[in-house]
Image (cartoon, rainbow, N blue to C red; front, top):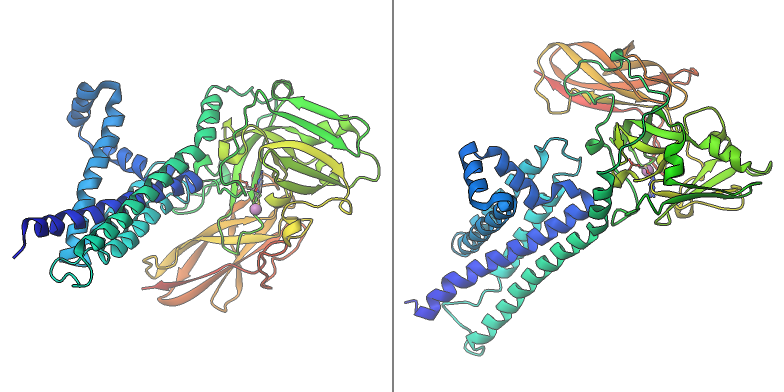
Length: 514
Ligand SMILES: Nc1nc2c(c(=O)[nH]1)N[C@H]1C(S)=C(S)[C@@H](COP(=O)(O)O)O[C@H]1N2
Ligand SMILES: [Mo]
């Protein structure tokens, strides 16, 4: 027979276990969002989803009731509902395991769907809500096994000790959640400040416009767009918190083996004639078939012009660029002096650089992997020699030089996609920046290589879309792609991992045709 205290323990402590677990998970989710994908804060995405789904009378009522505080009211409302569901999950988990964890898992799925269906969801949008759910589920399982037992308190242990111990664990879990959320908020303080400044910036008009020919985009469902929207652009850097650089205090210094040291402020940079160019950036850590690659229209000023002012000495052969947070990249001097569009970029797809992509100024150099060329938040260029200095990733086992390798990728069909016999469009992208793509061929199983159709290239500095209409019969088939560049080099089938200077091999995909 449950006593009053027994009943209280029977409901209150399990509910508390649920609330503490979800508090922990929610905090982890906010911290993960701050680090991985600031736009995918679980609270904000679920709130945004509710705003989109809410009928307009509810929105009107909320505005009438709360005025400009309607968003805050919504977030508080979400928190209350979340706490209620969390309490219910705790009680369920005690009475009908594993349904409490299942309930939290379902909440996680709602968060993931909310995050991934936002317009321009970043690649990692799924991660913060997924991590929040996983952390909550683990915490719930942990706390439930530490509930003081109601039926058979061990005679040697007064039940009060169990209870206090449980409250300690639950309080600890909730406290970790709160600290994680505060940590996430603090990590983003700089970004918030700089984003506010960034929003007020109007970039000057380019003196030279880039043109993207209409033939550069093939009309194939599921094919990567030829220009990557900023929100979907891959992000790779060593920064735990995105560096917050105020353009008014930013300056760039070019020094080292030069006749004349050069410094440049933000206003001086914007006063120079800025040019638009289209360049595909790629990461050396991109596996064959991977997505650490993106193409943008950049606005910037040629590095070559500023180097000419500095006038490097004849024996210099490298430029060590440094970001405000200490990252360095070693770029061959000659590459920064030739006629390619190696630039100090201030704009990306018509906007100031997003904070994660190097605001206010980054380097973009066609033809080299990012780790040896694309320094974000750049503040310093030291003209030096490869035998006198080395860069961040070179000191960690990667090659000092990193020209991009000839590669191609299949985007569609996806593996596991429903396919039926007949004509199936195979399509993807191919790239060899600053060399250019001449041809792409597709192989089905062990058949002959057959030419794909290339889209119009924007330039030799960008990737090119391709398509191939495959007359498919039913069964399981392997599709393979191979590019040939403008110099006549054929993409190698030899497999190499990403270390030390980029992966090689052919991308293939196995599909089943009904
Ligand atoms: N300051 C700084 N710049 C950096 C990096 C970094 O870690 N710190 N990573 C480089 C690497 S490895 C790549 S692939 C590109 C990625 O640029 P993105 O994040 O804009 O796509 O940035 C480069 N610039
Ligand atoms: Mo990279």
